[in-house]
Image 1 (cartoon, rainbow, N blue to C red):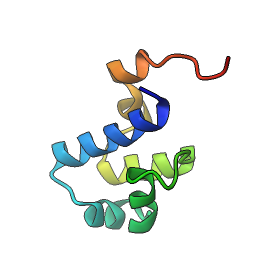
Image 2 (cartoon, rainbow, N blue to C red):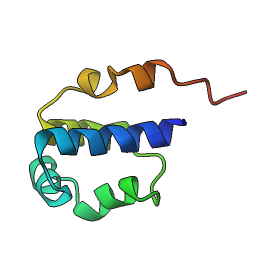
Image 3 (cartoon, rainbow, N blue to C red):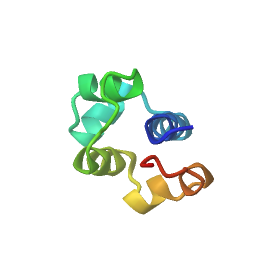
Length: 80
């Protein structure tokens, strides 16, 4: 699994855990719903760290919480 898929899955996981919709996350994070949808549906495969930080703020978690998963820890190097 690549980095993009891992980020997308983590956002979806957190939305489920927090029982939040994309719209609610957009309101809480000040990230437009279209930007969130672009990340989740593959149009934006490289969300910036500032966007991820804003999403984390909307989810009421830290960036460390976001990335502190087994899936991120096991990502293979993508540059060869």
